[in-house]
Amino acid sequence: MLTEERHKLILEELRNNSVVYVNELGKMLDTSESTIRRDLNYLDEVGKLKKVHGGATLLEKEFHTKDDLVSIRETLNINDKSIIAKHAASLIKKDDFVYIDSGTTTNLMIDFLEEKEAIYVTNGINQAKKLISNGFRTYILGGEIKDSTEAIVGVEAINSLKRYNFTKGFFGTNGISDYRGYTTPDMKEALVKEEALKRTRNSYILADKTKFNEISCITFGEIDEAVIITTILENTSYCNKAEIVEVLKL
View 1 (cartoon, one colour):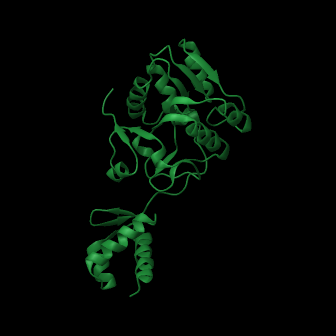
View 2 (view 1 turned 45 degrees about the vertical axis):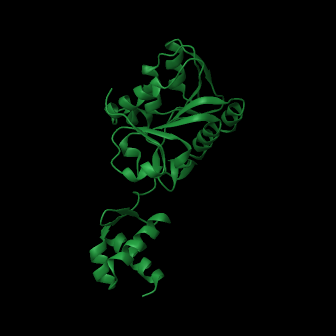
View 3 (view 1 turned 90 degrees about the horizontal axis):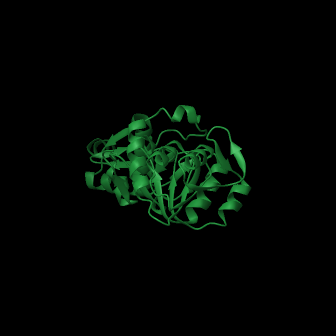
């Protein structure tokens, strides 16, 4: 049997069952297990499946094409988000020039900030309000306000970012994929995130475990462009693709 034909049959079996096993594929295709493992390795490398011990699984769920409202997202995974946010806040030092992206975890991060001699720039309306009320020196980008995320987006926001060069940046994401990178559903918001990421020396993605193996329709950064701050990482394959910081408690 030709290699391409084996690959096609493996992917068909995976679509039908969501998981495949090396020993069962070997019997089904009348092929050695070592050959099946090579096939799975190749298909994993080209982003067709996720290789796991003894077999393979489907990659991600369906693509996400829209954001949930902030009021909904603020109620999800609060404990994990708080753990991540506190660690992120501890990374800011005197004289840092910091970008804080819009998002529920980046918003929580402000509750833990202590460094008053840093300067903060944000595209989040809630973030700006909280920074100012807590006595931090704050700049906000200009541009269009997006209803669902209360983020400032658009051409004016991107032009504002071109003035800045950040020492540290903290970003939210809707999804993390080892081959699609960091993703979000909205083109305008993705372009702002992409520009801010490019202008940041040390970038951090704040992501609880629900963000892994998820894809939204627009990529704003490759997986190796930032350090991921999370709690317990269940899929250790990400450790080969990006720097991961696992934070276990407040």
